[in-house]
Amino acid sequence: MPPEIFDEPSRDIVELRPTPCNWHTKSYTVDEIKTTVLDCLKMGMPAGGAAKRARISLARLAQLRTADPEFDTDCEEAIAFYMQFLVGCVNQGAVKDWHAAAWGLERGFPQLFGRRDTVAIVNKLETYDDATLWELVQRATSTVTGGVADSVPDPPTTGGAEAAGSDGCETVARE
Image (cartoon, rainbow, N blue to C red; front, top):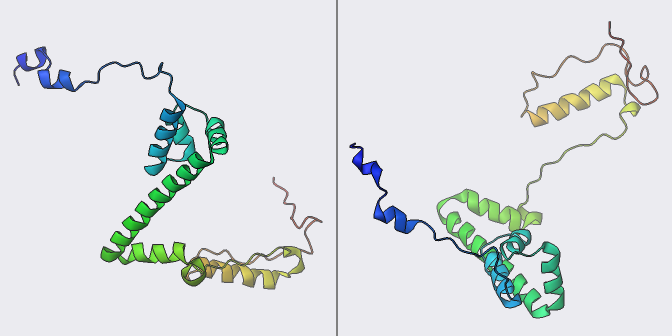
């Protein structure tokens, strides 16, 4: 490209540059702050982000909501508006992809359609002998790996809860 193109910036580019403003020094009225917060909440911004955008602290936002029950109700409605928008997006996606429908069912009706992943928690390892404990480890590992337990090491040959200290941990001397 010829160098003369880069000598002078294009008029279109110059006109698109933002003009300097003094928004950071301007003081806002309470109504302007509330409007900004509500607009941000309707877009899905968290309360902390909405407060920052309105140039107030989260504590000040909480004070405004407590002092003005109507504003508090408006904030809740703005959050509900965004939730309704997201549910609509999931419903539109569910028409094209079953994953969105499954997600909606899991989240909307967890008692009926929620995942049923169960994990056995063993609280007292010292009450099991080595063979029983080893069987529990193999079952848990095969459940996690989908039945493939090739990475499980061989069972311990010595010690166990009986040979361990009072806390259930074996002491191993390193050379």
